[in-house]
Image 1 (cartoon, rainbow, N blue to C red):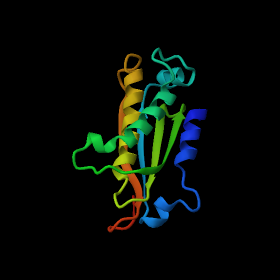
Image 2 (tube, one colour):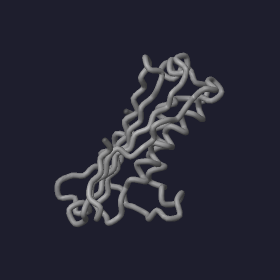
Image 3 (cartoon, rainbow, N blue to C red):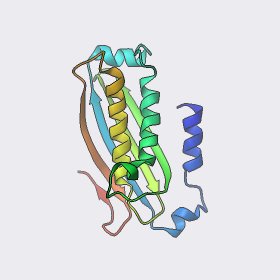
Image 4 (spheres, helix red, strand yellow):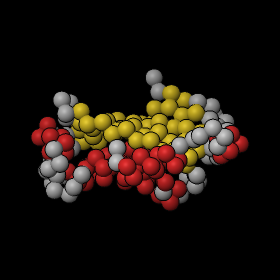
Length: 159
């Protein structure tokens, strides 16, 4: 994880006494997505051989920026002051895919599912965009909400 992103995680992480979370109900969401590709493509990503640059770092930055801008992308999505964004981008060379998880948290009255889903989707789209000239068979699959907490509807977890 780059130092800049690590510092950003630390700035946004909940610490004891963080009034934003203690005063509100607290909302969290976890989303997942997968991007499948040819074995040669994942090898090029891992070896830094993609012409457009560091694919995984670009996907991470785009996902974080997208999560923070979700309300400007969707007309019925309220602005949310995220207090935490965590991304797990896991390249699996043997399976020729990259698994992406995004965790979002906020202390306000609005859910954060759309922010987590947006982060995952934009990470997948960034990887696709950077690798499309190398691999015409890239597939984005299995984007879904894994779990959420907080809110009037309570928690949710996929089976």
